[in-house]
Structure formats: C-alpha cells, structure tokens
Image 1 (spheres, rainbow, N blue to C red):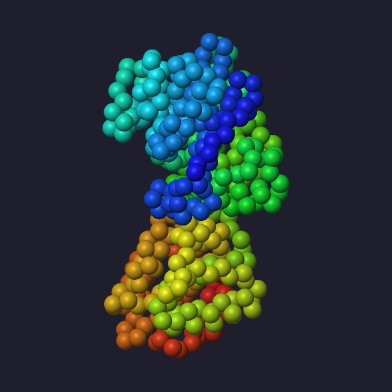
Image 2 (cartoon, one colour):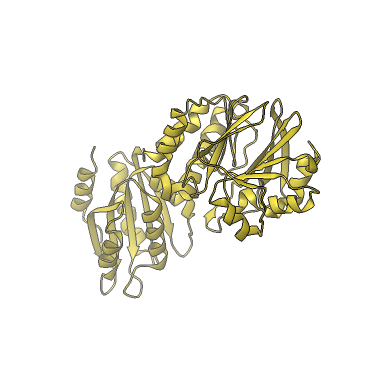
Length: 402
C-alpha cells in the first residue's frame, strides 16, 4: 500500500510526499523496483495559501487528506502547476472538484490548452505566466522560470525569494523512496545509492533532452538565485549539500563517465554469443577494465533502465547480437533503439555478431547505428561456435585509449 508523509520544511512551507511502491514501470517503460515519490508543496502565508503541484491521480484521496492535515482545502487561493505530466497534476482536478471555490491556477502558457485537453479544465482563473514573471504576494515573491524540455516543453520552476527555495518539479528529481525527507538525514552510503537512482531517473526520463540542462542551470545563475533549499517533485529535498545534486546533473548533462568501466550487452539464444562474450570479458578484465554485463538469454531478462545507466556511465560498449530470422534479435533491436535515443555522448562500440548461415545482423546493426552516438570502431563477425579474434579486441582497446 502507498503511504504519505507531511512535514514542515521551514516556517509556512510544507512538503506533502507520496511514497509510491506500487508503480513498477515508470511511464509504462522504466523498471523502478526502488519506487518513486511525488512531492507537492504547500505555502501558508498570512491570508494566502499556495499549493505547488499534485500527485498521481491514483492517490487523489490521500492527497486531499494530506492537505487537510494542514489547511482546509477551501483555504487554497493559488495552485502552481510546474509541469503537466499526470504524475504531478493527476490529483489536482479531483481536488478542484471537491472545493467550494476555485483557486487561481498559474501555469506555463502552453499548459492552458493542455489542462483543457487532459482534464477538461477551462477557466478564466487559469493564468499563464511568462518566463521570469514575478508573483508578489507581499509576504513572499515567487519568480517563475521557464525550463523547457526538463522534462516537457511547458516545464517551469518557482523560486521563493524569502524562503530562498527552488521548487523544481522534474528538475533535480530521482527515483527511489528515501528514508528521510532531507539529504542531511541520510548517511553517505545512502546518498551514494540515491545519486545512482538520480542518474537512472535522468537518463531514462530526461536523457533525450540532456542538452537543455546546462542552459537551464546557467539561466538560474544569471538571475542571481542562490537557493538554500532545492525542492524537487520526486525524491529528496536538498538543504545541506545542494552541490551534490547540482553536480550530478552536470555530470549527466556533460556525459561524464567512469574511464575504467565497459558495459557489455548481448542476446544469446543457445549459448554461442554468450561463449564469445565470455572470452571478450575475460580479456577486457585482464587488461584492467571493470565489465558490467547485461544479457538476454533463455534464463535472463535485464532491466532496460539499468542498461541505460551503465551504458551512460561507461567509457565504451561491447554489443553482442544473435542473428534471428535473417535479422537482428528483437530484444537487441529494441535495446539499440533505446540506447540511440537516450545516450547523447559518443560511445565507442565493439560490435559482435554471431550467425549460423548468414550474418545479416552485422549489416543491419551498422545501418541502425549510423548517425547515432553509438560508434562501432571494431567489428567481430563469428560463425556460431568459433572464438573471437584477440587481435580485434586489442585494436578496440587501442582505439578507446584516452
């Protein structure tokens, strides 16, 4: 069962956090056995109550109950929706349907029509805000900053001037259900694990749009904003080591990787590819590399989410493909499509294909990887049952030397 937490962050500002361990595939794609949180925020100023974002629709009753533990729902004067994706907005129409009066809703200009199409919400009280618009509430000033493509084109964040708080929705978010609310409630080991889930979140959800991260961070800097709190829509609230999550995002945006790590991904129907990849793995490890293996066999099904994280943080990739009905094995065809879409920094590839009567997979894989960041620098084409040529592996290692 899902559970939620309500906590005071600082004077007048609360987090409402739903811990979702029921969703197994985020966006219906990404495996998240670690779960995810949905964070909404409530600001209770004298005479004015502001709600920032909501939860997934499945948890609407809990959402309303959480709000009522702080204020009457009819006391909400303003709702700010940073991003229209339904994990942040799905519960809001349910909340509005229970209220006796309608609050003013502040959104990105693109979101107005999306509210109408997603939820049938049409109202003169839906107020589009321009980039850098300021909402002066007397006791607090809220600056709205457009951050397009982090993660949709209508995404924005809010800066609360008095509280020195950035409410960032998907930006700086992460998978997992942390033990604490704040970063300083976790030990170093837990923080390291959390940052892994943050990288997983970034590469799966924001991977295609990573080139927009640094411009967004730079925009915040040019506005002179120096927050004391980063409050995302998923995961931990950062109040002590803000640079940890900011640097993690920069690492991701710039494609920084572990120079000692190589990720190996392969399909093997009857063990021929697996045998060849085992020989290659042994040689790579003998030469000082740490090899992470993801394999599709008659016993194994890896997580595409974890494949992406390992590929993104690796120096190079070794990809092994079984020929299947004179084509690419379907699983590897899917993996190559996802990798090409989400991995934006150049990755040298050792491409290994294994065949029985003809190697169509080599030709098809080469074509599929054209004009992508996956760059085959060496090829091994093997008749099933034969061993890979060591000289080609040596050449591959020479080509990936820094």
